[in-house]
Length: 383
Image (cartoon, rainbow, N blue to C red; front, top):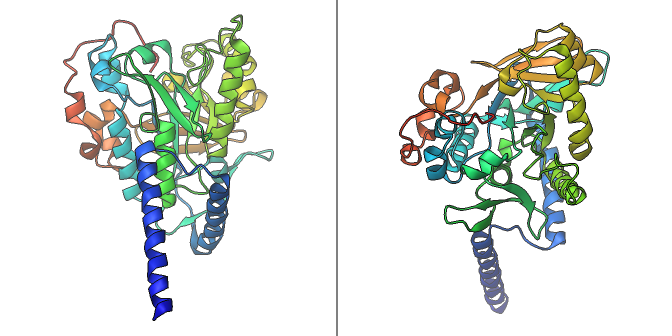
């Protein structure tokens, strides 16, 4: 009887301690500080993944690809500012992004790394055998322009990504009252990291998204384009630290061109010069990549000199544009895809594009979008 009583007391103590830890984490939005706890968690996840592999089934359909722009944590500023129309059409609020990934998860989509779907290592690009949990559909999620341009900082996006004391990526922003805010609840990277942590079946092997970066105003909120700045080396190193942690957490990086140029309307020489500059300034920060995302979705013809330059000379093996439905085409040197935008336009006027993935009405946030009163952009942001 005494042993039973002691066991009950022990269990009560353990439950109390664990409850306290959970409450602390909810208040601070931080992971446990002890490195040993994180290591145990990683070992458990790896073991669980190995067990899950036994129940995987081959997937033979199209590889789905959706994309977003950096989300908006301050919708009033975004939908009443100088680029309100662009924000209303092309952006999601933070709550809309959260609703979108919940819908995708509910509808059995699973995030994948493009390299798990395609083999880029040989003379010819080909599809790999992709085995997924039964009923799951593979999804590449890309995020365009996570550079946090000056216009974004003014109009309701975060300012940059930073690391917290636990070496986790969070965001830094300026709220509507001018106060600096560091948060794990405002930007796509920490939000998706947190969601996958809670819902591991939403990600295959821990994959998150593909971050497509330009270079003309730096990367991830760091002005690494200002090569002559006395702070250049520090900014570059800070950005590289963010990239390192993001790669650890399952993120991939790709080119979105240097100057966000329209490839359809650009000459071959303009494309070459733009790509060389991206390779010179951005690649040293994010590392080599074989992923390329057309700005504006403006593509060049398959087989054209520009396409051959991108795929054969510069080694981009996944080249993605924009379209109304899932599409992929394998060429000898690259796979091309059409991506579908999760944005204000498709959530309101182009719902048919998103209905295979989500209920647009469950994502579109009327309360946050009520601030928009119509109008047009006055200053041409890069969307």
